[in-house]
Length: 264
Image (tube, rainbow, N blue to C red; front, side, top):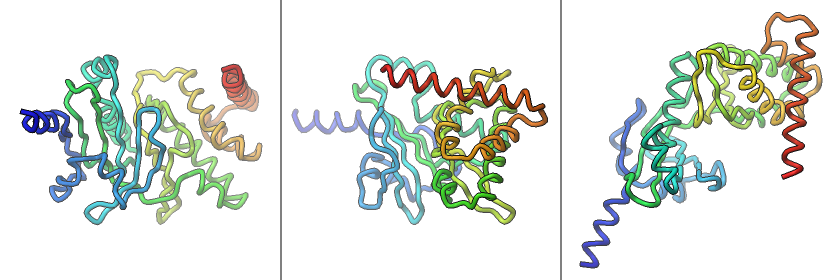
């Protein structure tokens, strides 16, 4: 009885592939049976600490590098969210699909995995092919002054295009971008696509939130000319007054965020 129950319990808690992406390979099926084991294997490199209900790691398996993201779905809230809007891993895959449909480079999906809904410690996992490039904030640090201005303008153009498609990534920090060298220049790839929504009309407050995220994660390390180069590229053809108003709005929103953090 005891042994039978342990076997049954393991089966109930086991991971199941609920979606096979374009990068799926049958040879990887055995390794993907246990994303937790992948993250703790000798071939894994942690990319984020396992806090806030998510663990992320870079893993070499089957001769290629993949990124494994495992999400916790605790309590009644986890049940309700999966039933209404899907698991966190499924939502991340949908965010990736929205960006791809708009023509942006995105990581290729290997698989979406989930544990059964009825288990108390339910979880989900997204496995994607690693984007081969350099994290954007590290790339920025190695640039010469003139190159930084061009990169800031390229980043502003990228964000402008994302917003023009009505896309709203809720976490657009510079560390969530990978820079991929190309024959012409460089390509920006947003790799954290957990919460990407599409709106028929993207409100200024949402666009401002993304601009503040970038200003706080990169802008504070940039010169004034580089920050204005980014903003001018984002806003397009506007007069100086509009440019100054947008800059003031970003600074004010960032200061409010600082004040909230200090008072917390």
